[in-house]
Length: 131
Image (cartoon, rainbow, N blue to C red; front, side):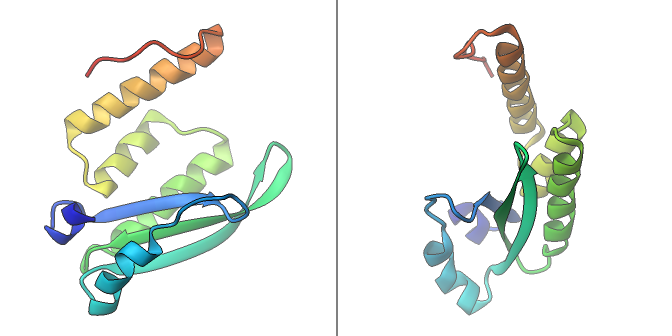
């Protein structure tokens, strides 16, 4: 949140099953939402996961003037859900929307590729990836 308040990070995103035991950051962000320094949007939707319809809570926090990122980020996540996978394009776009550097995005994409390969090859846990 400090990166958001300093203006470095334009968007934060959290998502989980509504039935999951998950510590949501609402309380941490709330004073800044109330003061108008950060905008909040919650979206509930249904996703089919392993053949079961599950309610998902997606929580977005954006800096004022950057709220357009919420719609783009949510469309990005829904696109990945529809096709059943996150593409490199989706990962890169989401990283940009969240305000990560090109290097940080590249490291994430490399890490995701290592995870996918390890799962395919039965090599679990995956080998550590270097930045």
